Amino acid sequence: MGLVRALLPLSRAAARIGPGPGRRLLGALLTHCVSPYWVLLRPPPSRRRQAWAEEAVAVYRALAGAEGARPRDRDLLARSLVQHAYTLVLVGRCEEAYSTLDAASDVPGARWPAGQRALQLHLRAQAQFGLARLDDALGSARECVAAYRSLVPARRDRSLGALPGALRTYALVLAALRRREESVAVYEECVALLRSMSLRELSHAFLVRVRALCELTSGLVVLGRYEQALSVGREARDAADPMMLRAVPEIVRPLRVVLFADLARCLRVTGDLPAARTTAAEAVAEARTLAGRDPAAGEPLLVMALDRLGDQLDEPEHRPAELTVRREAADLSAALASERPDVYDPLLAVCLDRLAGCHTDAGDQRGAVRAGERAVAAYRRAADLDPRAHEPQLARVLADLSRSRLHDGDPEGAIGAAREAVALTRRLAETDRPVDHALTARRLRVLGRALRDGGDHGAAVACYTESESILVDASAGSEAGPYALSLAAARLGLALTLDAEAHARLADGRADDAVAALRSLLALTRRTDQPDVHARCVTSFAGARAEYPGTVVPAWSRATGQDFPTFVYRLSETVSGDRPPGGN
Image 1: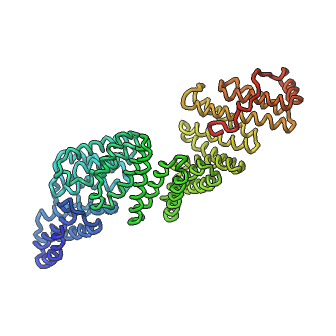
Image 2 (image 1 turned 90 degrees about the vertical axis):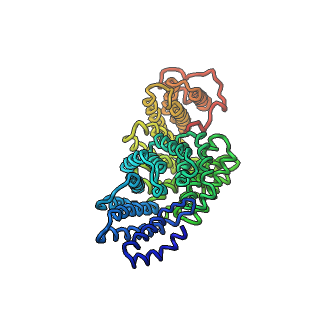
Image 3 (image 1 turned 90 degrees about the horizontal axis):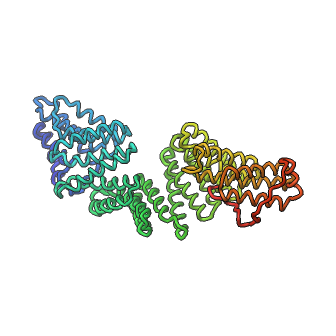
């Protein structure tokens, strides 16, 4: 390769002296430099390959346009344009690559061997994928795979594309279209084909092997197939070894970051927590190295790796370390969002949301409120750009912020955040009710809790009653099924609120209103057999009679015409609790 580069100045001089033979020699040398045959050598930088490809196109264009041009000159011009498109795809200039491929197809009289046609389809699929034209990319990738299945590419084309590479591109497009099962199946076919290759055959597909194994690991993780992901991930780790890292660090190091993060998740799920923490720390170390050399590529991956490390530290004994990691991820994502808010505000919102959760777990409600407020602001900005993607998350973090404010002693702030969460969730439910109606019920419980703690018992009762009604409708009259826990939480919250309302009204001297709350509480016990609701009813009636016998008993008799109920249960402070499950 070095010798070929050294000959380029001489061949350029020969092209000026003897335009025909000299240009053909120069074109051949440039083509060799763009796609070197000796694949174990470190490839030259992408932009240098791009310059050589542009020069080769100019050389062959001059040959094809000269008098007495040979048919092969037009063939070589078409091939050089395809190689130029390849170098453009490498640097992400997909629009130009697509135009260059069209220009290659338009070369008059050019002959297209089957391998060259398959390579053109492969590059077209990659360019369409880079342009987010996923449906077009899917068709091109499928056609490309079919073309490669029917041929063995010539040696000169193997470094640019072959069936394993085409399968990997096809799987990548399927993954982007969220057709995960199909994507993993194609990746598995690709990996099986690579495993069956001899070392000589594999020498042209080392990089495809690393990519396919790493991406298959990610696909298996998404599908929850963690044991398989661990097995494939270990193979990917061996493939992405230090030798490959030295050869193509700009490609292999980002793959290693994502791979280590995926392996950390698998190890945690399968119960090996120390190994999960160690592997997540390796991902962070790789990402730091990448960020130091290429901040644009490395810093987003560093945020992801820090977030994954935070997940592995989510245990009481590691809480200080988790807080440090979460803060770093939030600070770094804030710096990215300040430069590209349209791209990084969603990432910032996620990091701040998780930082708020970490503060909550550590018992720092003030820190949780501060991080939650910043998360809400970031999600508002993201929702302004893409409401469909980010408004559901905005509603969720508003509900979380309400809880944090309530625990921090700010019921008014909690009520405001919860009201907005409920309003936003109602609007979302209008367009996707089968998904969001249970969320509406949950957010109503959050608002009900805030209103109860803020002293507005009537409004809180209305929230819990509506939440119960929504969930009863959703469960079709049965308390079993996916809504059972939510329904139980709504009814317990309603019982607690009616109890609080009854005692508040008795304290204010409004016995008739207190009796109305107690009657609603008794009616609730008749439509559920929840022990905690019945226990709350018992203690509420017993407490009202014990504390206000001279007012509540006559008021009950006036309202119902019956004696005040008596119970065989004794009043016990251990029966009830002020913090019921389910967020009430």
